[in-house]
Length: 141
Image: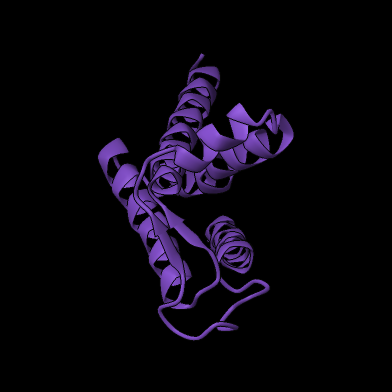
């Protein structure tokens, strides 16, 4: 039971840090409600960064969106959930973040964030599944 408690505590810490970085950051409610911007052209900003040669910021945004949502997929796998459920949980968390950024005026709600965040959750689920299977094989041989 202690292992479960630590997992829940780590997951709570992950969510708190994620929400601090994405929603409850500088600019939160600074401009009023429903003042965020929405960018529905997938990867438009990332393409603009690439064309401008701003590779460091491009990499930060691209990799960051994957990495920050990988724990959600890992969490789903550790809870014994299927890949589809992990995908759904990650998608819903990402959608919640993007909607919150628009509602609280603290960021740009971008379609590419939703795509990359969900992909990050998928990668987290797959990596955790791989590690769990590998560990299981070691313990049974």
